[in-house]
Image (cartoon, rainbow, N blue to C red; front, side, top):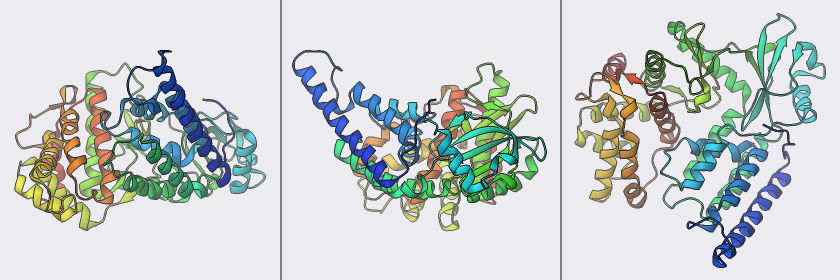
Length: 441
């Protein structure tokens, strides 16, 4: 993590994108010449995807922050074989990669939100952030009024105002450079990113969403902990909450198998509660949003900016689709998929089979015929679903419903997290309980 000034004006950010495009073109030309003259370079593959160009893209995304970096992070939680290898490598690197802004920029944001005497709110405030992400950076501080340790999230200047231009510039860059395969509905992905980024830049909304989650999980305080927001030190671009002492669940190497099972179980169960009971979900799948506190034996939940409601006309048939898939009812899955908009009813047989098979595969841990305990250490779900993607990219007649982008990103993120943990989960029983609570049969 290093310091660099955030380009905050639209012109400044446009200039940065233009410079990136130019440098990547020259990088590709140079790579082509090296290959043609036998002067080394990367063996095979697109010259646009050379190691040098990939490094340029990582550095630029980390310095730009905002929409560019966030879109990269959102795409990084797609399955690894959907995108070209070099692109996937970049996106994995930018998950936790962002420079932090200089003190002068940070202080300007704090003063405009909390007043010129903002330092009077704190008895101490760490100058260097403990984390820097796509939208803002987080500082460790102590409240003067109570002596409580808190985390202060400060938004990068200009990020909210540049969402539209950032995403438009990034779309042009990705399309012109042909960095992404055809058929991924980049326009729909960017439209979804535009909506979610606007939510994530609204720290007042994020505070409200966090409090809403606290209320929804009030019956499970022994398992989940949602941090309390400190309203006296908050503003539209500053969010202060209690400091959490847990560690990211994927960063602990000393978990017992029982701990891995417990964490995987409660992360996946929360995901099902969000779908079937709350109809409201924190849709950011970033694994760093889940902390484990060994002292309290609780999961600590972070980052509610991308939380969203799902309308009944989408979520109710979606729940019935999951239930039909768990029963291997191909006809019901097809009919509900048409109702939801995944299919038009005029697809080729190859597309129809690929879609229905992928849904049944996704629901496999919850299936009536599934083992009592599903072992994510041996799961092949993601590999098999990947096998259907080429057909669906080639044959799909319409993009999936807008709600799908965030819901499936979170659901697949939960599956992949369970796999990374090597968790063993009673998925069949968990799903049956979720369906019973939702009164779906």
